[in-house]
Image 1 (cartoon, rainbow, N blue to C red):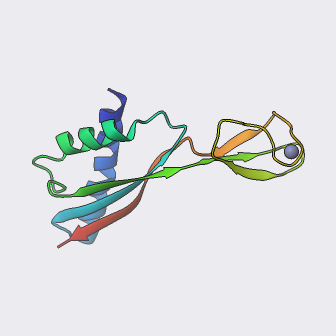
Image 2 (cartoon, rainbow, N blue to C red):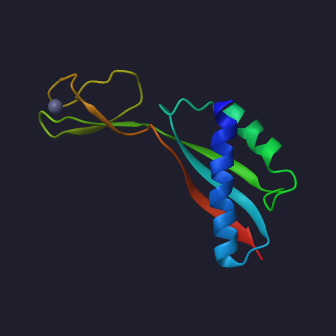
Length: 114
Ligand SMILES: [Zn+2]
């Protein structure tokens, strides 16, 4: 299960953060998840709930913020955020575009309690 290994690496970040701030508890976690990351938010939520038992994030709430796809066109230098799956440049119509955002998952915010 892809989501479970992602959650494991998220917990490494949480534990690092808590240790650095001398916190005893993680109360809220905001994750930014690219719409093209291949992550299913529901599976991520249930993996998080499964994983957090017995950790310092046992009572933490997970919020998932979707990140839309952002494209950059090497041809005309244009950048655009696409809500749909039309991955072409809004400026010149080129289909040779690079995806610069929307493929990653990262921890945006961690709320801690000491
Ligand atoms: Zn272009």
